[in-house]
Image (cartoon, rainbow, N blue to C red; front, side):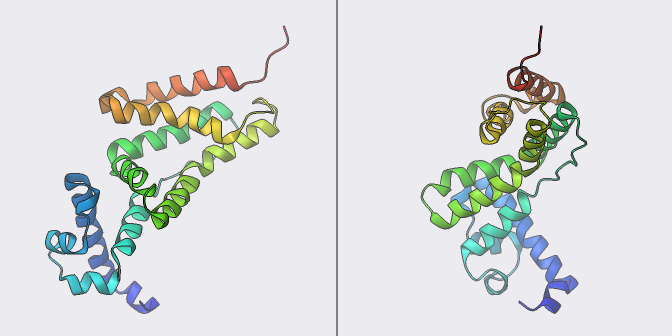
Amino acid sequence: MSARAELDPRVLRTRRHVLAAARAVLVEEGWERVTVTRVADRSGYARTTLYRHWPQRLDLLRDLITDEVHLLHTVPTGDVRADLVAELEAFRVAITTTGLGRVMIAIGQQASDDGELAELSSAVRADGTRVLDEIITSAVARGELRAQLDPDVAVAQLVGPVLFRYLFDSHDDIDGAFVVTVVDLFLRGASPPTDR
Protein backbone atom coordinates (compact mmCIF):
# COMPACT_ATOMS: atom_id res chain seq x y z
CA MET A 1 0.00 0.00 0.00
CA SER A 2 1.36 3.44 -0.88
CA ALA A 3 2.20 6.03 1.76
CA ARG A 4 -0.50 8.27 0.30
CA ALA A 5 -3.13 5.55 0.66
CA GLU A 6 -2.06 4.94 4.28
CA LEU A 7 -2.83 8.59 5.07
CA ASP A 8 -6.19 8.62 3.30
CA PRO A 9 -8.85 9.07 6.01
CA ARG A 10 -11.07 6.48 4.31
CA VAL A 11 -8.30 3.89 4.44
CA LEU A 12 -7.58 4.69 8.07
CA ARG A 13 -11.28 4.43 8.92
CA THR A 14 -11.59 1.10 7.10
CA ARG A 15 -8.55 -0.33 8.88
CA ARG A 16 -9.83 0.91 12.25
CA HIS A 17 -13.30 -0.63 11.67
CA VAL A 18 -11.90 -3.94 10.45
CA LEU A 19 -9.45 -4.24 13.34
CA ALA A 20 -12.28 -3.45 15.78
CA ALA A 21 -14.34 -6.23 14.19
CA ALA A 22 -11.36 -8.61 14.37
CA ARG A 23 -10.89 -7.72 18.05
CA ALA A 24 -14.58 -8.41 18.74
CA VAL A 25 -14.37 -11.78 16.97
CA LEU A 26 -11.26 -12.70 18.96
CA VAL A 27 -12.75 -11.73 22.31
CA GLU A 28 -16.23 -13.16 21.72
CA GLU A 29 -15.55 -16.21 19.54
CA GLY A 30 -11.91 -17.16 19.97
CA TRP A 31 -8.67 -17.21 18.01
CA GLU A 32 -9.68 -19.81 15.43
CA ARG A 33 -12.63 -17.71 14.29
CA VAL A 34 -10.45 -14.70 13.37
CA THR A 35 -10.53 -15.38 9.64
CA VAL A 36 -10.83 -12.96 6.75
CA THR A 37 -14.31 -14.29 5.97
CA ARG A 38 -15.58 -13.99 9.55
CA VAL A 39 -14.04 -10.54 10.07
CA ALA A 40 -15.45 -9.34 6.73
CA ASP A 41 -18.91 -10.51 7.80
CA ARG A 42 -18.55 -8.86 11.20
CA SER A 43 -17.16 -5.58 9.84
CA GLY A 44 -19.51 -5.21 6.90
CA TYR A 45 -16.60 -4.81 4.46
CA ALA A 46 -16.04 -7.07 1.48
CA ARG A 47 -13.42 -9.80 1.67
CA THR A 48 -11.67 -8.16 -1.28
CA THR A 49 -11.25 -5.01 0.81
CA LEU A 50 -9.70 -7.01 3.63
CA TYR A 51 -7.39 -8.87 1.23
CA ARG A 52 -6.26 -5.52 -0.21
CA HIS A 53 -5.08 -4.44 3.25
CA TRP A 54 -4.13 -7.87 4.61
CA PRO A 55 -3.16 -10.30 1.83
CA GLN A 56 -2.96 -13.18 4.33
CA ARG A 57 -4.72 -14.02 7.58
CA LEU A 58 -1.40 -13.70 9.39
CA ASP A 59 -1.11 -10.08 8.21
CA LEU A 60 -4.51 -9.32 9.75
CA LEU A 61 -3.57 -11.13 12.96
CA ARG A 62 -0.23 -9.31 13.15
CA ASP A 63 -1.93 -5.90 12.84
CA LEU A 64 -4.62 -6.90 15.34
CA ILE A 65 -2.04 -8.08 17.85
CA THR A 66 0.25 -5.11 17.31
CA ASP A 67 -2.68 -2.73 17.71
CA GLU A 68 -4.00 -4.51 20.78
CA VAL A 69 -0.80 -5.04 22.69
CA HIS A 70 0.47 -1.52 22.36
CA LEU A 71 1.02 -0.81 26.02
CA LEU A 72 1.32 2.77 27.12
CA HIS A 73 4.56 2.61 29.03
CA THR A 74 5.53 4.93 31.83
CA VAL A 75 8.66 7.05 31.92
CA PRO A 76 11.04 5.92 34.67
CA THR A 77 11.99 8.60 37.21
CA GLY A 78 14.81 6.80 39.01
CA ASP A 79 12.70 5.88 42.06
CA VAL A 80 12.74 2.09 41.73
CA ARG A 81 9.62 1.41 43.80
CA ALA A 82 7.53 4.17 42.26
CA ASP A 83 8.70 3.23 38.76
CA LEU A 84 7.89 -0.47 39.22
CA VAL A 85 4.47 0.33 40.68
CA ALA A 86 3.65 2.75 37.83
CA GLU A 87 4.73 0.37 35.06
CA LEU A 88 3.06 -2.69 36.59
CA GLU A 89 -0.09 -0.63 37.15
CA ALA A 90 -0.08 0.37 33.45
CA PHE A 91 0.16 -3.33 32.60
CA ARG A 92 -2.66 -4.21 35.02
CA VAL A 93 -4.92 -1.59 33.54
CA ALA A 94 -4.13 -2.73 30.00
CA ILE A 95 -4.93 -6.39 30.61
CA THR A 96 -8.09 -5.73 32.59
CA THR A 97 -9.65 -2.91 30.56
CA THR A 98 -8.62 -3.69 26.98
CA GLY A 99 -8.39 -6.89 24.99
CA LEU A 100 -4.70 -7.24 25.84
CA GLY A 101 -5.17 -10.08 28.30
CA ARG A 102 -7.20 -12.13 25.81
CA VAL A 103 -4.73 -11.43 23.02
CA MET A 104 -1.81 -12.48 25.20
CA ILE A 105 -3.55 -15.76 26.01
CA ALA A 106 -4.35 -16.36 22.35
CA ILE A 107 -0.78 -15.62 21.24
CA GLY A 108 0.62 -17.89 23.91
CA GLN A 109 -1.64 -20.76 22.89
CA GLN A 110 -0.93 -20.46 19.18
CA ALA A 111 2.76 -19.51 19.20
CA SER A 112 3.96 -22.99 20.09
CA ASP A 113 2.43 -24.35 16.86
CA ASP A 114 3.24 -21.46 14.52
CA GLY A 115 6.76 -20.14 13.89
CA GLU A 116 5.61 -16.75 12.60
CA LEU A 117 3.37 -16.24 15.60
CA ALA A 118 6.22 -17.35 17.86
CA GLU A 119 8.33 -14.53 16.40
CA LEU A 120 5.48 -12.09 16.91
CA SER A 121 5.02 -13.35 20.46
CA SER A 122 8.70 -12.73 21.18
CA ALA A 123 8.46 -9.22 19.76
CA VAL A 124 5.34 -8.49 21.82
CA ARG A 125 7.05 -9.76 24.97
CA ALA A 126 10.17 -7.69 24.29
CA ASP A 127 8.14 -4.52 23.78
CA GLY A 128 5.88 -5.25 26.72
CA THR A 129 8.72 -5.80 29.18
CA ARG A 130 11.12 -3.17 27.82
CA VAL A 131 10.45 -0.54 30.50
CA LEU A 132 10.38 -3.02 33.41
CA ASP A 133 13.69 -4.35 32.12
CA GLU A 134 15.09 -0.82 31.98
CA ILE A 135 13.90 -0.01 35.52
CA ILE A 136 15.43 -3.20 36.90
CA THR A 137 18.72 -2.86 35.02
CA SER A 138 19.12 0.76 36.11
CA ALA A 139 18.31 -0.07 39.74
CA VAL A 140 20.90 -2.87 39.70
CA ALA A 141 23.48 -0.43 38.28
CA ARG A 142 22.65 2.07 41.06
CA GLY A 143 23.02 -0.66 43.71
CA GLU A 144 19.33 -0.52 44.69
CA LEU A 145 18.75 -4.13 43.61
CA ARG A 146 21.05 -7.14 44.03
CA ALA A 147 23.85 -7.26 41.45
CA GLN A 148 23.17 -10.90 40.52
CA LEU A 149 19.49 -10.26 39.81
CA ASP A 150 18.44 -11.68 36.42
CA PRO A 151 16.18 -9.07 34.75
CA ASP A 152 14.14 -11.76 32.92
CA VAL A 153 13.42 -13.57 36.17
CA ALA A 154 12.61 -10.28 37.90
CA VAL A 155 10.12 -9.33 35.18
CA ALA A 156 8.46 -12.75 35.54
CA GLN A 157 8.26 -12.27 39.32
CA LEU A 158 6.50 -8.95 38.82
CA VAL A 159 4.20 -9.73 35.89
CA GLY A 160 3.45 -13.33 36.90
CA PRO A 161 1.18 -12.61 39.86
CA VAL A 162 -0.84 -10.10 37.85
CA LEU A 163 -1.30 -12.56 34.99
CA PHE A 164 -2.16 -15.34 37.43
CA ARG A 165 -4.88 -13.24 39.01
CA TYR A 166 -6.15 -12.26 35.55
CA LEU A 167 -6.40 -15.90 34.50
CA PHE A 168 -7.77 -17.49 37.65
CA ASP A 169 -9.45 -14.89 39.84
CA SER A 170 -12.01 -12.16 39.49
CA HIS A 171 -10.70 -9.10 37.69
CA ASP A 172 -11.98 -7.14 40.69
CA ASP A 173 -9.17 -8.77 42.68
CA ILE A 174 -6.54 -7.11 40.50
CA ASP A 175 -6.44 -3.55 41.72
CA GLY A 176 -3.78 -0.96 42.43
CA ALA A 177 -3.32 -2.24 45.97
CA PHE A 178 -2.51 -5.69 44.62
CA VAL A 179 0.13 -4.17 42.32
CA VAL A 180 1.74 -2.33 45.26
CA THR A 181 1.81 -5.57 47.26
CA VAL A 182 3.47 -7.44 44.38
CA VAL A 183 6.13 -4.74 44.00
CA ASP A 184 6.81 -4.54 47.75
CA LEU A 185 7.20 -8.33 48.02
CA PHE A 186 9.52 -8.31 45.02
CA LEU A 187 11.66 -5.53 46.49
CA ARG A 188 12.00 -7.40 49.80
CA GLY A 189 13.66 -10.27 48.00
CA ALA A 190 15.53 -8.31 45.33
CA SER A 191 17.04 -5.51 47.40
CA PRO A 192 20.63 -5.92 48.57
CA PRO A 193 21.07 -6.85 52.23
CA THR A 194 21.39 -3.90 54.57
CA ASP A 195 24.18 -3.65 57.12
CA ARG A 196 22.96 -4.19 60.65
